[in-house]
Image (cartoon, rainbow, N blue to C red; front, side, top):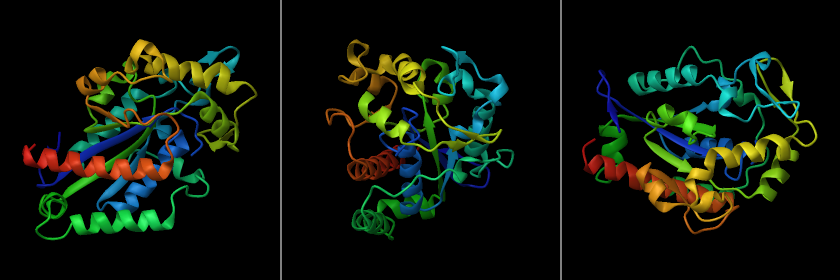
Length: 272
């Protein structure tokens, strides 16, 4: 819900989750980081919280098949992450106790054309003008939006975390694309320094964990098959149903912008 604060402001937490391929924000995690950064540029009063900033120290990570497992819920300090989300919902500001490392990681070349970004910015700008719904929501309502960039956010272990998220977006990816993007990564900054996936990490760790975490969202548990629309509705999770896997970032960005606008207007009409 939109939570009223003592200062008369509103804060909304929007999360996008997918497989952690840390590769491009939509089809995989860079995917999500890229998407979050684009949304921050398109919508006013937004800031980003990265799930990656809540990894436990490397010495506390679980192991699987002789490899450190960075891609499971147990690798995340869920209490610290939920503390940050609670702060955001109450205060509408980035938590001062979170030391973000994620912005040090490059997301590479933007996969969305300048023309499409300009078009979406213009659409949102028009929506924010006096007399339009966006003006009432953002200007008069003083709304602030936290874009929560994460992976495995919608697994059973994150059930309490999900309750702190207002708009939940789930981005799909195939095993082939996930592997391609993950293996193309140079690595990323961690608390201890720098991590690069060892050989076989995707097949042994990343993909099996993704399947275990998200099978409940799909018919017959097939994560490359059809989404279970009843489960999505019950848990208020938005996804590009029926559009297939590996949807290009430009299409996904446009869908995300439209989904955010529709959800904000719906919530405003219900006076939440």
